[in-house]
Image (cartoon, rainbow over all chains, first blue to last red; front, side, top):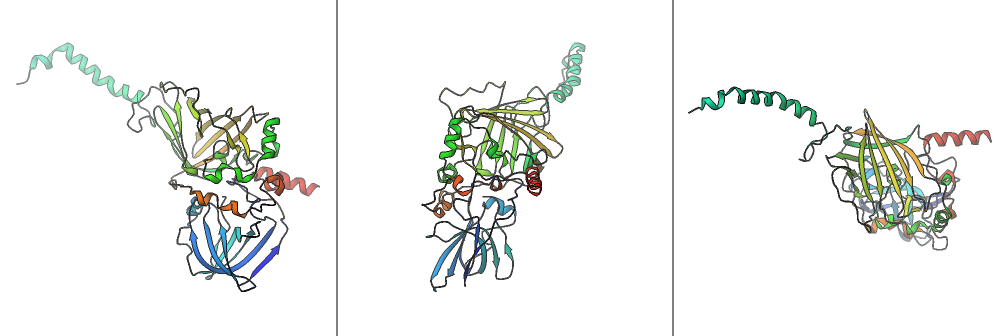
Length: 127
Length: 285
């Protein structure tokens, strides 16, 4: 279980059609960098407006941190085949996404989550 | 015993025969599709059939200004000051407040139109919104001087193949013009919508006016695709989930979009056509 911070430059222009996220993510998550984690799912809260996946990650110091991966709205995800049992406690995952600004938190948004069987829970719908 | 005098009288028979001949005609003229809904009486005039479920396609034509480029909006000095002072965390959406027009129209959710004889109901997946459009000519009471509401008061009428909806009497809304960037709307907001159906496409034209905030009205067009998929309801916004992202803001940085390049056009979602225009401009520079 490891954690990597990968600084990337935002290249290109965000495309959306149609568009209009419910709210901006930039004040809450650093859109110019990405973080990668590996851990064990403890809970999946599939509710509107922000479903959240909770993951226990052991950091480089051997401490367990709880990370929260925030997805787009549950309505849009349901339309794409998601449901509350699409992922559950005990599953090991890797995830890569934008980290939260607040250094006292461990949040992630816009994540690509890879399950142990290799299947992918893609980046979110609009929030 | 059959009263032969009653049933064989020539004048009565002729009158009855005339009735039996004309009644189906009368019903065919007065009863139109889409009018006899929900058990209410049939009205006098044909109306365009807009009933259906719709998924958002894109801004028209060809994705242009989808729905508008925030930086291009002309704001009044008051509107500009309020926008400059806006912080993302004060957005009422973080307390499950409903989106209102015009932001509501470009949200990526399905919605439905239900046409009744004296009103039209707009039903949205987003935020479980129900908007009632009170059709004119049916004696619906006018709102009182102090009546205002989050979704305002909507009146409507048909013009040819279009449904026209005018909504006023909105409350003040910190993000009532644009909920992504936080441009507010005042109690003077007035939204005029026009809907027309062509085959499986619903065309809408939207004009938003708010003389306190906008120096010029905003106009855009949008297209929807009719389909049979049911709406996924209820949306059921939960307060703790709505406020969830706010914990991730850095208290030292604040949450004004201007501090995060939020006013940077590259970070504001735009339609396909505008995107192509910018890419072309970039390659030329």
